[in-house]
Image (cartoon, rainbow, N blue to C red):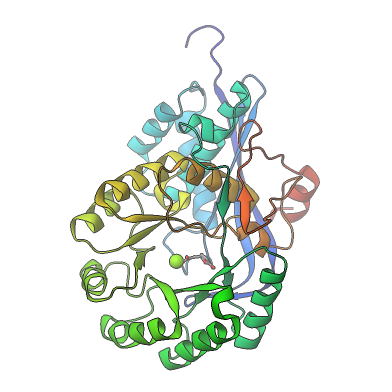
Length: 376
Ligand code: MUC
Ligand code: MG
């Protein structure tokens, strides 16, 4: 270490449980609350960076849980990097990559916290550390997933009235496909041209079921189909992508740049849902986006239903993506009743402004953190 070099002093991973504004029903889980892993990274110059990791429904969505993410950070990642200089995010992440396989959620929280700390130190927003923003705000869709068509229509009407969202994603795949198509058609009939609709099947269909029901969803007026079949079934994704004109988006099937490369080689998607949690952080997500760009695959700014910290970290990265043709779904902060930051993100005129303050541009609310944390 050179004299005066700023180093990492400590990591603190805190599990926080927040109630959702309503039940959120997906093919694999119904969420009544969301769990955040908040990471506080303290540096020897007194600067603190924060990061966040989430998943959906414990172990229902993927192999990593909030608890396993905290364990990876506390037991394996912290000892590797405490004492390291903080000025190279790449060097810290390379050290972690060498000794920790997988665990992209923990890596994403860490990379976010490092970027937040460095941004605060240099007085620049995180997107400036990523090469600079190419947009100042992001369009954000809303997911209708109450489980009830009437309630979803009322919710969409409210969002249109408030000018908060005019694109809606419907979570299907839990019920019989016929009931799902009727649900989608009822919502489209009620909203007409005032809104655009997408559907996320979350891997629930077989290829044969998808082949039967995708045309019906097209007739109902849907503009995009997300992850219709199992994430490992890349060949089925390729066949469905070539068979139908409607854009097919890969979500669970493409976690990071390596998987994006395989999908690109097999032409297995028209669009990829980028998520910092899948790619191991804001820098990781830009690597995935670069592969997609090179293959002519469209990019979409996805969410693992992160709260304010994870969503704003995503916003900095998505602002720096060269192309983001399909918009974003960074609505997570609005799905929870409360959060652990002083000023919560807001969406106006269908857009989320990308913060310009140093680092992420957020401040932890210590009282709320103390109130919502699980261990006290
Ligand atoms: C997913 O699979 O896309 C995004 C929106 C939502 O409601 O759930 C997430 C996960
Ligand atoms: Mg999805």
